Image (cartoon, rainbow, N blue to C red):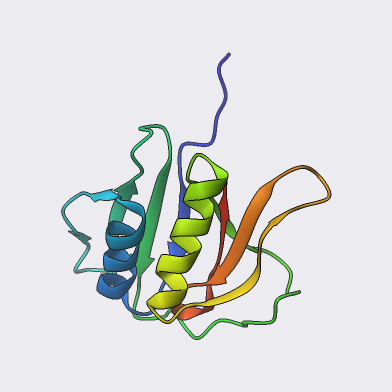
Length: 130
C-alpha cells in the first residue's frame, strides 16, 4: 500500500490574493475556480512544479479571522522546498523586497535544514527550505 498526503487545504479570507501569491512567488499552477453556490464554498487547487505537491485554498462565507499567535495549536506552517541554499536566499530576498516579513533565517537549523520563515498573506507562516 502506497500512502502519501494528497494535498493540504487552507481556508483564507481573500481567495484571489492567496492564489496570486502562490502563483507569483512559487510558480504554482491553478485549476479553474470551483464554486458551490449552495454552500458558498470556493476553492482552487494549486500544483507545485514537482508534480506531487498540491495545496487547496478555500474560502467560505463563514470563515473568520485566524489567531496569528506563533505558538497556537494546530496548523503551524507550510514548508516549500526551493532546491538549494542559493534559492532559499533568493526567494527570501524576493519576498522581503515585496513587503513580507522574514521572522527567521536564512540559516542552518540545528536539525540540518537550510531555511527561512516568512509571514505570508493573512499571517500564514511559510518556511522556505533547500
